[in-house]
Length: 528
Ligand SMILES: Cc1cc2nc3c(=O)[nH]c(=O)nc-3n(C[C@H](O)[C@H](O)[C@H](O)COP(=O)(O)OP(=O)(O)OC[C@H]3O[C@@H](n4cnc5c(N)ncnc54)[C@H](O)[C@@H]3O)c2cc1C
Ligand code: SF4
Image (spheres, rainbow, N blue to C red):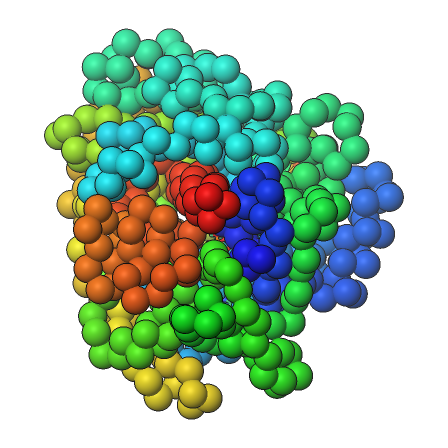
Protein backbone atom coordinates (compact mmCIF):
# COMPACT_ATOMS: atom_id res chain seq x y z
CA UNK A 1 0.00 0.00 0.00
CA UNK A 2 1.10 3.55 -0.76
CA UNK A 3 0.64 5.96 2.13
CA UNK A 4 0.07 9.65 1.43
CA UNK A 5 0.51 12.10 4.31
CA UNK A 6 -1.64 15.23 4.05
CA UNK A 7 -4.86 16.10 2.20
CA UNK A 8 -3.76 19.47 0.76
CA UNK A 9 -3.51 20.00 -3.02
CA UNK A 10 -0.28 18.01 -3.30
CA UNK A 11 -1.54 15.11 -1.20
CA UNK A 12 -4.66 14.66 -3.33
CA UNK A 13 -2.71 15.09 -6.58
CA UNK A 14 -0.27 12.35 -5.52
CA UNK A 15 -3.04 10.06 -4.23
CA UNK A 16 -5.09 10.37 -7.43
CA UNK A 17 -2.03 9.64 -9.58
CA UNK A 18 -1.04 6.56 -7.54
CA UNK A 19 -4.64 5.25 -7.76
CA UNK A 20 -4.64 5.90 -11.53
CA UNK A 21 -1.53 3.72 -11.72
CA UNK A 22 -3.28 0.89 -9.88
CA UNK A 23 -1.78 1.33 -6.39
CA UNK A 24 -4.03 1.21 -3.31
CA UNK A 25 -3.63 4.38 -1.26
CA UNK A 26 -4.13 5.15 2.43
CA UNK A 27 -4.10 8.86 3.28
CA UNK A 28 -3.14 9.91 6.81
CA UNK A 29 -4.07 13.42 7.88
CA UNK A 30 -4.55 15.62 10.92
CA UNK A 31 -7.62 16.81 9.01
CA UNK A 32 -9.12 19.66 11.04
CA UNK A 33 -12.39 21.03 9.65
CA UNK A 34 -14.62 24.11 9.87
CA UNK A 35 -16.55 24.40 13.14
CA UNK A 36 -20.02 22.76 12.68
CA UNK A 37 -21.95 25.87 13.82
CA UNK A 38 -20.26 28.00 11.15
CA UNK A 39 -20.89 25.34 8.50
CA UNK A 40 -24.57 25.23 9.49
CA UNK A 41 -24.77 29.01 9.07
CA UNK A 42 -23.25 28.76 5.58
CA UNK A 43 -25.82 26.11 4.63
CA UNK A 44 -28.63 28.36 5.90
CA UNK A 45 -27.39 31.20 3.66
CA UNK A 46 -27.24 28.97 0.61
CA UNK A 47 -31.00 28.48 0.47
CA UNK A 48 -31.83 32.19 0.85
CA UNK A 49 -31.72 34.79 -1.92
CA UNK A 50 -28.62 37.02 -1.59
CA UNK A 51 -30.78 40.02 -0.62
CA UNK A 52 -32.16 38.12 2.42
CA UNK A 53 -28.81 37.16 3.95
CA UNK A 54 -28.90 38.40 7.57
CA UNK A 55 -26.29 41.11 8.17
CA UNK A 56 -25.15 39.64 11.50
CA UNK A 57 -24.57 36.17 9.97
CA UNK A 58 -22.62 37.75 7.14
CA UNK A 59 -20.50 39.77 9.57
CA UNK A 60 -19.69 36.64 11.60
CA UNK A 61 -18.80 34.61 8.50
CA UNK A 62 -16.69 37.40 7.02
CA UNK A 63 -14.60 37.97 10.16
CA UNK A 64 -12.70 41.18 10.94
CA UNK A 65 -11.62 43.42 8.05
CA UNK A 66 -8.65 44.89 9.94
CA UNK A 67 -6.48 44.26 12.98
CA UNK A 68 -6.03 46.63 15.92
CA UNK A 69 -3.14 48.37 14.12
CA UNK A 70 -5.10 48.71 10.86
CA UNK A 71 -3.23 45.91 9.03
CA UNK A 72 -5.04 43.39 6.88
CA UNK A 73 -5.85 40.42 9.13
CA UNK A 74 -4.88 36.83 8.41
CA UNK A 75 -7.21 35.51 5.74
CA UNK A 76 -9.98 33.43 7.32
CA UNK A 77 -12.44 30.90 5.98
CA UNK A 78 -16.04 31.67 7.01
CA UNK A 79 -14.67 33.74 9.91
CA UNK A 80 -12.71 30.74 11.20
CA UNK A 81 -8.97 30.26 11.56
CA UNK A 82 -9.25 26.44 11.32
CA UNK A 83 -6.95 26.34 8.22
CA UNK A 84 -3.96 27.37 10.37
CA UNK A 85 -2.09 25.09 12.81
CA UNK A 86 -1.46 27.82 15.41
CA UNK A 87 -0.34 25.47 18.19
CA UNK A 88 2.14 23.83 15.90
CA UNK A 89 3.37 27.21 14.66
CA UNK A 90 3.80 28.41 18.28
CA UNK A 91 6.48 25.81 18.97
CA UNK A 92 8.68 27.31 16.24
CA UNK A 93 10.53 30.63 16.25
CA UNK A 94 10.32 33.01 13.31
CA UNK A 95 12.72 35.93 13.09
CA UNK A 96 11.84 38.28 10.27
CA UNK A 97 9.67 35.67 8.52
CA UNK A 98 5.95 34.93 8.30
CA UNK A 99 5.39 31.30 7.29
CA UNK A 100 2.20 29.34 7.84
CA UNK A 101 1.37 25.71 8.55
CA UNK A 102 -1.90 23.91 8.16
CA UNK A 103 -3.44 20.87 9.85
CA UNK A 104 -6.70 21.25 7.93
CA UNK A 105 -8.49 18.73 5.80
CA UNK A 106 -7.70 20.35 2.45
CA UNK A 107 -4.68 22.16 3.91
CA UNK A 108 -4.22 25.79 2.90
CA UNK A 109 -6.45 25.31 -0.16
CA UNK A 110 -9.35 25.85 2.27
CA UNK A 111 -8.33 29.50 2.28
CA UNK A 112 -6.36 30.01 -0.94
CA UNK A 113 -6.90 32.51 -3.75
CA UNK A 114 -7.35 29.83 -6.46
CA UNK A 115 -5.04 31.59 -8.94
CA UNK A 116 -3.66 29.02 -11.40
CA UNK A 117 -1.08 29.30 -14.17
CA UNK A 118 1.49 26.75 -15.35
CA UNK A 119 5.21 27.46 -15.29
CA UNK A 120 7.31 27.67 -18.43
CA UNK A 121 10.21 25.25 -18.60
CA UNK A 122 12.76 28.07 -18.63
CA UNK A 123 11.47 29.25 -15.23
CA UNK A 124 12.30 25.88 -13.65
CA UNK A 125 15.79 27.11 -12.79
CA UNK A 126 18.23 24.49 -11.41
CA UNK A 127 15.66 21.71 -11.80
CA UNK A 128 17.11 18.38 -13.01
CA UNK A 129 16.12 18.21 -16.67
CA UNK A 130 14.36 14.86 -16.18
CA UNK A 131 11.90 16.60 -13.81
CA UNK A 132 10.95 19.50 -16.06
CA UNK A 133 8.52 17.82 -18.45
CA UNK A 134 5.27 18.56 -16.61
CA UNK A 135 2.83 18.91 -19.53
CA UNK A 136 1.06 15.58 -19.04
CA UNK A 137 0.91 16.21 -15.29
CA UNK A 138 -0.60 19.69 -15.74
CA UNK A 139 -3.31 17.99 -17.80
CA UNK A 140 -3.88 15.32 -15.09
CA UNK A 141 -4.23 18.00 -12.42
CA UNK A 142 -6.65 19.95 -14.63
CA UNK A 143 -8.86 16.87 -14.54
CA UNK A 144 -8.86 17.01 -10.72
CA UNK A 145 -9.64 20.67 -10.23
CA UNK A 146 -11.91 23.00 -12.19
CA UNK A 147 -10.01 25.57 -14.19
CA UNK A 148 -11.99 28.62 -15.30
CA UNK A 149 -9.93 30.18 -18.08
CA UNK A 150 -10.38 32.44 -21.08
CA UNK A 151 -8.70 31.63 -24.37
CA UNK A 152 -6.89 34.94 -24.57
CA UNK A 153 -3.52 36.68 -24.82
CA UNK A 154 -1.98 34.56 -22.05
CA UNK A 155 -2.44 31.38 -24.01
CA UNK A 156 0.58 31.85 -26.23
CA UNK A 157 3.03 31.82 -23.33
CA UNK A 158 0.93 29.75 -20.93
CA UNK A 159 -0.88 26.95 -22.79
CA UNK A 160 -4.09 25.47 -21.42
CA UNK A 161 -3.35 21.86 -20.56
CA UNK A 162 -6.30 19.54 -20.09
CA UNK A 163 -9.96 20.48 -19.77
CA UNK A 164 -11.08 24.00 -18.86
CA UNK A 165 -14.33 25.67 -17.81
CA UNK A 166 -15.66 28.98 -19.12
CA UNK A 167 -13.87 32.04 -17.73
CA UNK A 168 -15.65 33.81 -14.90
CA UNK A 169 -17.37 37.07 -15.81
CA UNK A 170 -14.87 39.86 -15.11
CA UNK A 171 -15.99 42.75 -12.92
CA UNK A 172 -16.77 45.97 -14.80
CA UNK A 173 -13.53 47.50 -13.50
CA UNK A 174 -11.62 44.47 -14.80
CA UNK A 175 -13.41 44.57 -18.17
CA UNK A 176 -12.38 48.22 -18.52
CA UNK A 177 -8.80 47.38 -17.54
CA UNK A 178 -8.64 44.50 -20.05
CA UNK A 179 -10.03 46.79 -22.78
CA UNK A 180 -7.34 49.36 -21.99
CA UNK A 181 -4.57 46.72 -21.92
CA UNK A 182 -5.72 45.37 -25.30
CA UNK A 183 -5.64 48.85 -26.80
CA UNK A 184 -1.98 49.20 -25.64
CA UNK A 185 -0.91 45.68 -26.51
CA UNK A 186 2.06 46.74 -28.65
CA UNK A 187 3.50 49.20 -26.13
CA UNK A 188 3.05 46.68 -23.33
CA UNK A 189 4.62 43.94 -25.45
CA UNK A 190 7.66 46.17 -26.08
CA UNK A 191 8.06 46.44 -22.29
CA UNK A 192 7.76 42.65 -21.93
CA UNK A 193 4.29 42.75 -20.39
CA UNK A 194 1.69 40.17 -21.36
CA UNK A 195 -1.72 40.05 -19.78
CA UNK A 196 -5.02 38.23 -19.74
CA UNK A 197 -7.99 37.37 -17.65
CA UNK A 198 -7.09 35.54 -14.44
CA UNK A 199 -7.24 31.75 -14.48
CA UNK A 200 -9.02 30.46 -11.41
CA UNK A 201 -9.83 27.10 -9.84
CA UNK A 202 -13.51 27.96 -9.57
CA UNK A 203 -16.61 26.14 -10.80
CA UNK A 204 -17.86 28.60 -13.40
CA UNK A 205 -20.49 26.90 -15.57
CA UNK A 206 -23.42 29.34 -15.42
CA UNK A 207 -26.44 28.02 -13.47
CA UNK A 208 -24.78 24.67 -12.72
CA UNK A 209 -25.05 23.43 -9.15
CA UNK A 210 -22.16 24.57 -6.95
CA UNK A 211 -21.08 27.15 -9.52
CA UNK A 212 -20.11 30.75 -8.87
CA UNK A 213 -23.07 33.05 -8.32
CA UNK A 214 -21.05 36.26 -8.05
CA UNK A 215 -21.80 36.68 -4.37
CA UNK A 216 -18.55 38.63 -3.90
CA UNK A 217 -17.42 36.86 -0.70
CA UNK A 218 -14.52 34.97 -2.25
CA UNK A 219 -11.92 36.47 0.10
CA UNK A 220 -13.71 35.35 3.26
CA UNK A 221 -15.26 32.01 2.27
CA UNK A 222 -17.50 31.16 -0.67
CA UNK A 223 -21.03 30.38 0.59
CA UNK A 224 -21.64 28.24 -2.53
CA UNK A 225 -18.34 26.33 -2.20
CA UNK A 226 -17.62 27.27 -5.83
CA UNK A 227 -13.91 27.82 -5.14
CA UNK A 228 -12.06 24.50 -5.42
CA UNK A 229 -10.30 23.18 -2.36
CA UNK A 230 -8.57 19.82 -2.25
CA UNK A 231 -11.39 18.63 0.06
CA UNK A 232 -13.52 18.48 -3.11
CA UNK A 233 -11.05 16.05 -4.68
CA UNK A 234 -10.76 14.15 -1.38
CA UNK A 235 -14.53 13.57 -1.52
CA UNK A 236 -14.12 12.13 -5.02
CA UNK A 237 -11.21 9.94 -3.92
CA UNK A 238 -13.47 8.35 -1.27
CA UNK A 239 -15.52 6.87 -4.12
CA UNK A 240 -12.50 5.21 -5.76
CA UNK A 241 -11.69 1.58 -5.02
CA UNK A 242 -8.46 1.15 -3.09
CA UNK A 243 -8.64 4.51 -1.30
CA UNK A 244 -8.74 4.83 2.50
CA UNK A 245 -8.69 8.07 4.48
CA UNK A 246 -7.74 8.29 8.17
CA UNK A 247 -7.96 11.66 9.84
CA UNK A 248 -7.14 12.70 13.42
CA UNK A 249 -3.58 11.41 12.97
CA UNK A 250 -0.39 13.42 13.17
CA UNK A 251 2.58 11.64 11.62
CA UNK A 252 5.67 12.22 13.77
CA UNK A 253 8.39 10.00 12.38
CA UNK A 254 9.34 7.77 9.46
CA UNK A 255 11.60 4.84 10.09
CA UNK A 256 13.14 2.92 7.22
CA UNK A 257 13.77 -0.74 8.09
CA UNK A 258 14.96 -3.72 6.05
CA UNK A 259 12.06 -5.96 7.15
CA UNK A 260 9.06 -3.64 6.92
CA UNK A 261 9.91 -1.02 4.30
CA UNK A 262 8.91 2.27 5.88
CA UNK A 263 7.34 2.35 9.34
CA UNK A 264 5.16 5.40 9.91
CA UNK A 265 4.81 6.48 13.54
CA UNK A 266 1.82 8.69 14.32
CA UNK A 267 -0.12 10.14 17.26
CA UNK A 268 -3.92 10.20 17.28
CA UNK A 269 -5.97 13.17 18.50
CA UNK A 270 -6.55 11.25 21.77
CA UNK A 271 -2.77 10.83 22.24
CA UNK A 272 -2.60 7.18 21.20
CA UNK A 273 0.63 6.10 19.44
CA UNK A 274 0.10 4.13 16.23
CA UNK A 275 2.35 2.72 13.55
CA UNK A 276 1.80 1.63 9.96
CA UNK A 277 3.97 -0.44 7.61
CA UNK A 278 4.16 1.14 4.18
CA UNK A 279 5.56 0.04 0.84
CA UNK A 280 6.03 3.70 -0.13
CA UNK A 281 5.26 6.97 1.61
CA UNK A 282 4.38 10.15 -0.29
CA UNK A 283 4.85 13.16 1.99
CA UNK A 284 2.69 16.26 1.38
CA UNK A 285 2.54 18.07 4.74
CA UNK A 286 3.55 21.50 3.43
CA UNK A 287 7.17 22.73 3.63
CA UNK A 288 7.47 23.37 7.39
CA UNK A 289 5.68 20.23 8.62
CA UNK A 290 7.58 18.17 6.05
CA UNK A 291 10.90 19.65 7.25
CA UNK A 292 10.00 18.83 10.86
CA UNK A 293 9.08 15.24 9.94
CA UNK A 294 12.12 14.51 7.78
CA UNK A 295 14.76 16.26 9.89
CA UNK A 296 13.41 14.48 12.99
CA UNK A 297 13.34 11.09 11.23
CA UNK A 298 16.98 11.62 10.18
CA UNK A 299 17.96 13.21 13.55
CA UNK A 300 19.43 16.01 11.41
CA UNK A 301 19.29 18.61 14.17
CA UNK A 302 21.24 21.85 14.05
CA UNK A 303 21.86 21.63 10.30
CA UNK A 304 21.07 24.74 8.28
CA UNK A 305 18.61 24.31 5.44
CA UNK A 306 17.41 27.02 3.09
CA UNK A 307 13.70 27.61 2.60
CA UNK A 308 13.24 29.44 -0.71
CA UNK A 309 10.36 31.89 -1.10
CA UNK A 310 8.90 34.16 -3.72
CA UNK A 311 9.42 37.86 -2.91
CA UNK A 312 5.92 39.28 -2.46
CA UNK A 313 4.33 42.74 -2.43
CA UNK A 314 0.90 44.32 -2.26
CA UNK A 315 0.51 47.49 -4.28
CA UNK A 316 -2.58 49.72 -4.60
CA UNK A 317 -3.06 51.29 -8.05
CA UNK A 318 -5.39 54.07 -9.15
CA UNK A 319 -7.19 53.67 -12.48
CA UNK A 320 -7.62 56.65 -14.77
CA UNK A 321 -11.24 55.74 -15.51
CA UNK A 322 -13.85 55.23 -12.84
CA UNK A 323 -16.70 52.71 -12.62
CA UNK A 324 -19.83 53.69 -10.71
CA UNK A 325 -21.75 51.55 -8.27
CA UNK A 326 -19.10 48.87 -7.75
CA UNK A 327 -20.27 48.45 -4.15
CA UNK A 328 -23.51 46.88 -5.39
CA UNK A 329 -22.15 44.98 -8.37
CA UNK A 330 -22.59 41.19 -8.53
CA UNK A 331 -18.95 40.20 -8.99
CA UNK A 332 -16.30 37.78 -7.90
CA UNK A 333 -13.49 39.18 -5.75
CA UNK A 334 -10.64 36.81 -6.58
CA UNK A 335 -7.82 37.97 -8.88
CA UNK A 336 -9.40 39.45 -12.02
CA UNK A 337 -6.43 40.04 -14.33
CA UNK A 338 -2.93 38.55 -14.58
CA UNK A 339 0.03 40.62 -15.80
CA UNK A 340 3.26 38.76 -16.59
CA UNK A 341 6.45 40.80 -16.85
CA UNK A 342 9.19 39.25 -18.98
CA UNK A 343 11.77 41.97 -19.08
CA UNK A 344 15.45 41.25 -18.38
CA UNK A 345 15.89 44.76 -16.95
CA UNK A 346 13.42 43.79 -14.22
CA UNK A 347 14.36 40.14 -13.63
CA UNK A 348 15.83 37.26 -15.65
CA UNK A 349 12.57 35.40 -14.86
CA UNK A 350 8.91 36.34 -15.03
CA UNK A 351 7.33 38.56 -12.38
CA UNK A 352 3.68 37.65 -11.85
CA UNK A 353 1.05 40.27 -10.95
CA UNK A 354 -2.55 39.55 -9.91
CA UNK A 355 -4.93 42.49 -10.16
CA UNK A 356 -7.95 42.71 -7.84
CA UNK A 357 -10.78 45.17 -8.34
CA UNK A 358 -13.34 46.32 -5.77
CA UNK A 359 -13.91 43.95 -2.87
CA UNK A 360 -15.19 44.31 0.70
CA UNK A 361 -11.62 44.70 2.06
CA UNK A 362 -10.91 47.61 -0.29
CA UNK A 363 -14.38 48.98 0.62
CA UNK A 364 -13.60 48.79 4.36
CA UNK A 365 -10.26 50.57 3.94
CA UNK A 366 -11.81 53.32 1.84
CA UNK A 367 -14.64 53.65 4.38
CA UNK A 368 -12.10 54.23 7.18
CA UNK A 369 -10.27 56.83 5.12
CA UNK A 370 -13.47 58.56 4.01
CA UNK A 371 -14.63 58.92 7.62
CA UNK A 372 -11.75 61.34 8.15
CA UNK A 373 -13.07 63.53 5.34
CA UNK A 374 -16.23 64.74 7.10
CA UNK A 375 -18.72 66.15 4.56
CA UNK A 376 -16.55 64.95 1.66
CA UNK A 377 -16.84 61.33 2.77
CA UNK A 378 -19.44 60.30 0.17
CA UNK A 379 -17.77 61.72 -2.96
CA UNK A 380 -14.37 60.47 -1.74
CA UNK A 381 -15.77 56.97 -1.30
CA UNK A 382 -17.38 57.00 -4.72
CA UNK A 383 -14.19 58.30 -6.33
CA UNK A 384 -11.89 55.77 -4.68
CA UNK A 385 -14.06 52.64 -4.80
CA UNK A 386 -14.58 52.95 -8.54
CA UNK A 387 -10.88 53.44 -9.32
CA UNK A 388 -8.81 51.56 -6.76
CA UNK A 389 -7.11 48.36 -7.80
CA UNK A 390 -4.98 46.10 -5.60
CA UNK A 391 -2.03 44.24 -7.11
CA UNK A 392 -0.38 41.22 -5.53
CA UNK A 393 3.08 40.73 -7.00
CA UNK A 394 5.38 37.70 -6.88
CA UNK A 395 8.96 37.33 -8.14
CA UNK A 396 11.05 34.23 -8.82
CA UNK A 397 12.66 32.72 -5.71
CA UNK A 398 16.15 33.31 -7.19
CA UNK A 399 15.52 37.05 -6.57
CA UNK A 400 15.82 36.55 -2.80
CA UNK A 401 18.20 34.92 -0.39
CA UNK A 402 16.20 32.14 1.20
CA UNK A 403 15.05 31.75 4.79
CA UNK A 404 17.42 29.85 7.09
CA UNK A 405 15.70 26.83 8.65
CA UNK A 406 17.19 24.74 11.47
CA UNK A 407 15.51 21.93 13.45
CA UNK A 408 16.31 21.79 17.17
CA UNK A 409 15.58 18.61 19.12
CA UNK A 410 13.90 20.18 22.14
CA UNK A 411 10.29 20.86 21.08
CA UNK A 412 8.89 19.63 24.42
CA UNK A 413 7.04 16.49 23.29
CA UNK A 414 9.95 14.62 21.72
CA UNK A 415 9.43 16.32 18.36
CA UNK A 416 11.71 19.10 17.16
CA UNK A 417 10.99 22.78 16.87
CA UNK A 418 12.03 24.82 13.88
CA UNK A 419 14.01 28.04 13.93
CA UNK A 420 13.37 30.27 10.92
CA UNK A 421 15.35 33.37 10.18
CA UNK A 422 14.82 35.68 7.20
CA UNK A 423 16.91 38.47 5.81
CA UNK A 424 15.17 41.71 4.83
CA UNK A 425 12.73 41.14 1.99
CA UNK A 426 14.06 41.47 -1.55
CA UNK A 427 13.27 45.06 -2.36
CA UNK A 428 15.35 45.57 -5.58
CA UNK A 429 13.18 43.44 -7.87
CA UNK A 430 10.05 44.96 -6.33
CA UNK A 431 11.37 48.51 -6.82
CA UNK A 432 12.23 47.75 -10.47
CA UNK A 433 8.76 46.28 -11.06
CA UNK A 434 6.97 49.25 -9.54
CA UNK A 435 9.11 51.68 -11.55
CA UNK A 436 8.12 49.87 -14.75
CA UNK A 437 4.44 50.03 -13.77
CA UNK A 438 4.79 53.77 -13.17
CA UNK A 439 6.47 54.25 -16.58
CA UNK A 440 3.70 52.26 -18.26
CA UNK A 441 0.84 54.00 -16.42
CA UNK A 442 -0.70 55.37 -19.62
CA UNK A 443 -0.62 52.02 -21.38
CA UNK A 444 -2.05 50.24 -18.35
CA UNK A 445 -4.59 52.94 -17.62
CA UNK A 446 -3.65 52.88 -13.93
CA UNK A 447 -0.68 54.08 -11.90
CA UNK A 448 0.91 52.67 -8.74
CA UNK A 449 0.35 54.35 -5.36
CA UNK A 450 3.90 53.57 -4.36
CA UNK A 451 3.79 55.13 -0.89
CA UNK A 452 1.00 52.73 0.09
CA UNK A 453 2.87 49.62 -1.07
CA UNK A 454 3.54 46.85 1.45
CA UNK A 455 6.52 44.57 0.81
CA UNK A 456 5.94 41.18 2.40
CA UNK A 457 8.24 39.58 4.91
CA UNK A 458 10.00 36.42 3.68
CA UNK A 459 7.24 33.79 3.67
CA UNK A 460 4.37 36.25 3.22
CA UNK A 461 2.43 35.25 0.15
CA UNK A 462 2.60 31.62 1.27
CA UNK A 463 4.80 30.38 -1.53
CA UNK A 464 7.80 28.65 0.11
CA UNK A 465 9.75 25.46 -0.50
CA UNK A 466 12.99 23.97 -1.69
CA UNK A 467 14.31 22.64 1.64
CA UNK A 468 15.25 19.26 0.10
CA UNK A 469 15.76 20.25 -3.54
CA UNK A 470 15.72 17.66 -6.32
CA UNK A 471 19.17 17.07 -7.79
CA UNK A 472 20.65 14.70 -10.36
CA UNK A 473 23.15 13.64 -7.69
CA UNK A 474 21.55 14.46 -4.36
CA UNK A 475 23.55 15.27 -1.24
CA UNK A 476 22.50 14.02 2.19
CA UNK A 477 19.60 16.45 2.64
CA UNK A 478 18.66 16.71 -1.03
CA UNK A 479 16.34 14.52 -3.05
CA UNK A 480 16.42 12.66 -6.34
CA UNK A 481 13.88 13.39 -9.07
CA UNK A 482 11.28 11.31 -7.21
CA UNK A 483 11.63 13.41 -4.05
CA UNK A 484 13.56 10.65 -2.25
CA UNK A 485 16.42 11.44 0.17
CA UNK A 486 19.44 9.09 0.17
CA UNK A 487 18.89 7.97 3.78
CA UNK A 488 15.12 7.59 3.46
CA UNK A 489 14.56 5.11 0.62
CA UNK A 490 10.85 4.54 -0.04
CA UNK A 491 9.90 8.01 1.26
CA UNK A 492 9.04 10.48 -1.53
CA UNK A 493 8.41 14.13 -0.77
CA UNK A 494 5.80 15.47 -3.18
CA UNK A 495 5.17 18.99 -1.84
CA UNK A 496 7.07 22.22 -2.50
CA UNK A 497 9.97 21.07 -0.26
CA UNK A 498 11.63 19.43 -3.28
CA UNK A 499 11.42 22.32 -5.74
CA UNK A 500 14.95 23.47 -6.66
CA UNK A 501 13.51 26.95 -7.33
CA UNK A 502 10.05 28.53 -7.30
CA UNK A 503 8.76 30.14 -10.51
CA UNK A 504 6.63 33.23 -9.81
CA UNK A 505 3.78 32.48 -12.19
CA UNK A 506 1.53 31.12 -9.42
CA UNK A 507 2.79 28.21 -7.42
CA UNK A 508 0.48 25.41 -6.45
CA UNK A 509 -0.41 24.21 -9.97
CA UNK A 510 3.26 23.49 -10.68
CA UNK A 511 3.82 21.79 -7.32
CA UNK A 512 0.71 19.62 -7.90
CA UNK A 513 1.94 18.72 -11.38
CA UNK A 514 5.30 17.72 -9.87
CA UNK A 515 3.47 15.65 -7.20
CA UNK A 516 1.52 13.91 -9.97
CA UNK A 517 4.74 13.23 -11.89
CA UNK A 518 6.53 11.79 -8.85
CA UNK A 519 3.58 9.61 -7.75
CA UNK A 520 3.15 8.16 -11.25
CA UNK A 521 6.86 7.49 -11.65
CA UNK A 522 7.08 5.77 -8.27
CA UNK A 523 3.88 3.76 -8.79
CA UNK A 524 5.07 2.56 -12.19
CA UNK A 525 8.54 1.62 -10.95
CA UNK A 526 7.13 -0.16 -7.87
CA UNK A 527 5.06 -2.35 -10.18
CA UNK A 528 8.01 -3.57 -12.24
C1 LIG B 1 -4.20 32.89 1.98
C2 LIG B 1 -3.53 32.00 0.96
C3 LIG B 1 -3.77 32.21 -0.40
C4 LIG B 1 -3.14 31.39 -1.35
N1 LIG B 1 -3.43 31.61 -2.67
C5 LIG B 1 -2.83 30.85 -3.60
C6 LIG B 1 -3.14 31.04 -4.98
O1 LIG B 1 -3.99 31.87 -5.36
N2 LIG B 1 -2.49 30.28 -5.89
C7 LIG B 1 -1.57 29.37 -5.53
O2 LIG B 1 -0.99 28.73 -6.42
N3 LIG B 1 -1.28 29.12 -4.24
C8 LIG B 1 -1.89 29.84 -3.26
N4 LIG B 1 -1.63 29.60 -1.94
C9 LIG B 1 -0.69 28.53 -1.59
C10 LIG B 1 -1.38 27.17 -1.52
O3 LIG B 1 -2.49 27.20 -0.66
C11 LIG B 1 -0.37 26.12 -1.06
O4 LIG B 1 0.67 26.11 -2.04
C12 LIG B 1 -0.93 24.71 -1.03
O5 LIG B 1 -2.05 24.63 -0.19
C13 LIG B 1 0.14 23.74 -0.56
O6 LIG B 1 -0.38 22.44 -0.62
P1 LIG B 1 0.24 21.21 0.18
O7 LIG B 1 -0.60 20.05 -0.18
O8 LIG B 1 1.69 21.11 -0.06
O9 LIG B 1 0.14 21.58 1.74
P2 LIG B 1 -1.00 22.21 2.66
O10 LIG B 1 -2.06 22.86 1.85
O11 LIG B 1 -0.26 23.03 3.66
O12 LIG B 1 -1.63 20.94 3.41
C14 LIG B 1 -0.90 20.21 4.33
C15 LIG B 1 -1.69 18.96 4.67
O13 LIG B 1 -0.86 18.09 5.42
C16 LIG B 1 -1.49 17.71 6.64
N5 LIG B 1 -0.41 17.56 7.61
C17 LIG B 1 0.56 18.45 7.94
N6 LIG B 1 1.42 17.91 8.81
C18 LIG B 1 0.98 16.65 9.07
C19 LIG B 1 1.45 15.58 9.90
N7 LIG B 1 2.56 15.70 10.62
N8 LIG B 1 0.73 14.43 9.91
C20 LIG B 1 -0.39 14.28 9.16
N9 LIG B 1 -0.88 15.25 8.36
C21 LIG B 1 -0.19 16.42 8.31
C22 LIG B 1 -2.47 18.83 6.95
O14 LIG B 1 -3.54 18.35 7.74
C23 LIG B 1 -2.92 19.22 5.53
O15 LIG B 1 -3.94 18.36 5.09
C24 LIG B 1 -2.26 30.37 -0.94
C25 LIG B 1 -2.05 30.14 0.42
C26 LIG B 1 -2.68 30.93 1.37
C27 LIG B 1 -2.45 30.70 2.83
S1 SF4 C 1 -18.27 35.29 -6.34
FE1 SF4 C 1 -16.83 34.22 -5.01
S2 SF4 C 1 -18.00 33.92 -3.15
FE2 SF4 C 1 -19.48 34.38 -4.74
S3 SF4 C 1 -20.13 32.43 -5.56
FE3 SF4 C 1 -18.43 33.13 -6.82
S4 SF4 C 1 -16.63 32.20 -5.96
FE4 SF4 C 1 -18.25 32.09 -4.42
